[in-house]
Image (cartoon, rainbow, N blue to C red; front, side, top):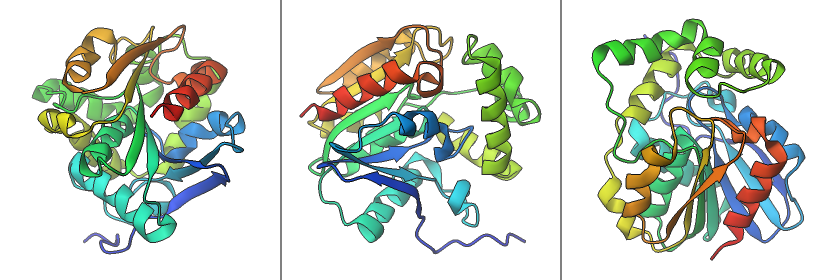
Length: 257
């Protein structure tokens, strides 16, 4: 029997800055909001206010049940914004799984979201995996370092990779890994992208074998104001691999209206 809570609203792991540009920040699959720590140290807190959200069952919200699908993740983030922040206008930044969720947030609140920056986002149409491939991704829990180095960020620094994996183990439990793998591989809201009139910047790391320019082309075509931006030298984790360049690019995108 699960001992996790199902009714509490998820909390923010950190809120930093006092600037007029408010940003909801969403993490990816392998780590909680700790994935942004290096970027946080370099973030502009004069012009921006950053709210770092942990999805249910991650980080500060480990006691909660995992959200159901990308829709459930987007609604959990919006509920936290409504309850804890009261923001009526804000931008959204998301990484990978959180990048797709950022776009879903924008389609659910199109007149509240001023801009979206999606860093190496997975597809809003889903990423179908056959049973063997799904099992391979799920089994990467046993050795996430090998999976990240082999399939996502081949050039990541060994020290950065070690710290990422250490934080992975501190951020979640094994069932959370599987639950969110199901979430990010199965969204189906590509047609809804047309509901969002604002700017969406899709960033890809130029050494990322998975989320590359070709993978993101369909998403870009379905956005009313979408653009693709490559980040040199980076793989799937630009906010770790090329912190200065990615943070500068992200902040520029979030200023767009």
